[in-house]
Image 1 (cartoon, rainbow, N blue to C red):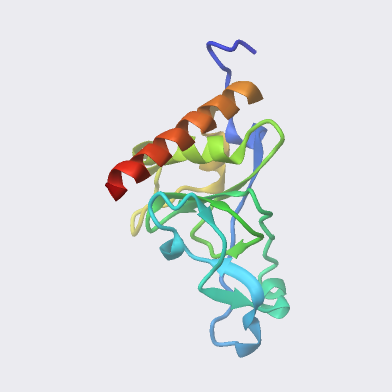
Image 2 (tube, rainbow, N blue to C red; image 1 turned 90 degrees about the horizontal axis):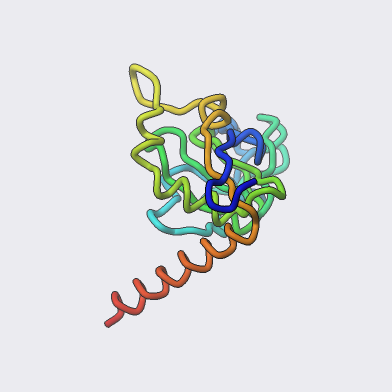
Length: 174
């Protein structure tokens, strides 16, 4: 793989795309448990990492929908209402159906993928389909092609982005 012109590959080659669901809200046994469960409304713009959720599920709630747990480091992507909110799971999570999340393989750093998606919100929105409301499907996300440079370049990119974030914070504070 060339360092100057990285190969563009589909997301399905660098991660596993997983969605979520909502357990029945009228079944009390599913709610107020210990398992973090997020909705797109909980993602703030430029929040980067998310560590907790407003609502929690019980084991019965998780099992009722066969939810797949997202490990820490999963890149969280809202797929509807709105499309393109992005964060990184700071802990394990479950989510509702408003997400198509990417569990990264060893070929890509979560912070690098997060930044790529964050910088391309307009493009992600252009992929939305549907008459009532726009949504991007699992297959659309899996087929998005992205540049994947070697790990050293990904790390350099992350260091640069983090430095820019620190500079923005200093300027905002002053």
